[in-house]
Image (cartoon, rainbow, N blue to C red; front, side, top):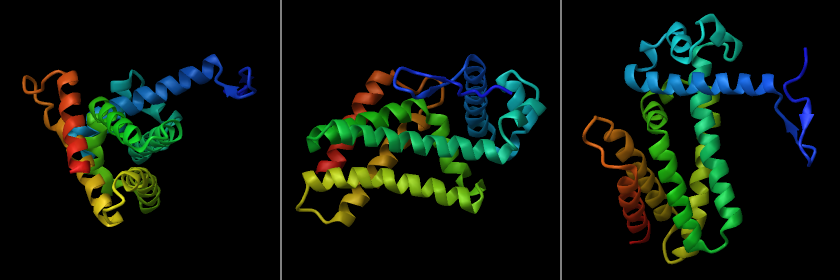
Length: 209
């Protein structure tokens, strides 16, 4: 069987073959559909057959990508936490000025919250469905993400205790994560551009007051 990583780019980094890209796209489609269905129906209310149908494949075909429904949930939450952490790391590496870094962290998190409202809802409601090992791994990723915010705040607010800054960071996450999915009812949500501006302004104020 040919490997999905049998080609390399100019820097020697493995790249996906067409077959590999198709597999990655199908996996992403399953996860996207699953996040929406878990958010709407709850984890217990969705079957493997439901996931396959929503992603355009048969139920058994889902097992080519995931060993079961619990693995789909684990992938949704693990991927989300990894995405947030890698995004924060890029901000920190490319934005040495603390004030600019904080604004970029806020903007990055707002973008994620607006694009992934279903994932945030699933995290809030279904986290305890994960097995203990996966919960530990996801929490570790999340703690590492929080520490990037706390470190940045410490540079801006050396007069404040670290514990206070950590509380402020978590409070900002609560604000940023709640608004996008609390406004999911049709007709109640303003344009993303309006929401983004409001969230960024309020998060900055809550962190720096």
